[in-house]
Amino acid sequence: MTSEVMDWDSAYRGDGVFGGPPPWNIGEPQPELAALHRAGRFRSAVLDAGCGHAELSLALAADGYTVVGIDISPTAIAAANNAAQVRNLVTASFAQADITALSGYDGRFSTVLDSTLFHSLPIEGRDGYLRSIHRAAAPGAELFILAFATGAFPAHLETKPHEVEEAELRDAVSRHWTVDDISPAFIHANALAMPGIPADAPYDRDEKGRLKFPAFLLTAHKPE
Image (cartoon, rainbow, N blue to C red; front, side, top):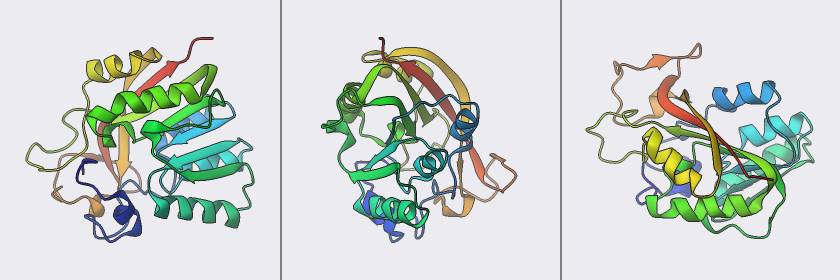
């Protein structure tokens, strides 16, 4: 599941390694970020980095936020644009682009959201990504990253996301942002869509039966 071997567009078409919709497509925003939304932690305009099918962007737009979602998969972007049109969410827009070399949005966003993107990037692409979103952020903007923690997946899996240590995450982000907090969190995923994860795997489940994978939630800001 690393980006070196993952065909992201195939994954979003449903004909890739998962044999159907990707497991992170849970039909709603990741609960950790949804809780921050309910708490009023986000400010417009919002950049949804690696938005996928963009349930987070769509939820924010439904509450009046101006949101731009960026993803490398044209299939995901088409689905997000279609959903915004169907729901008449005029403050949400989506574009297909390489987030590690993003341009054209300098100083635009007050909030940058990374809902499970960081761990999907090639390690050598992290710095370009963090530099790109920093350039797109306005002074005082906040960054939220939800990423798999080391040990989230069984060691025997040949391909998996780049799980991160807390110190590793802090070091990478602090090269461009001021890190405010890193706390334990969970990423929720559909159990049946996770190849290599046995049915009796020792993961907690949420009230909808989805697996809860250990993760970190990082908060940072761009100084004024």
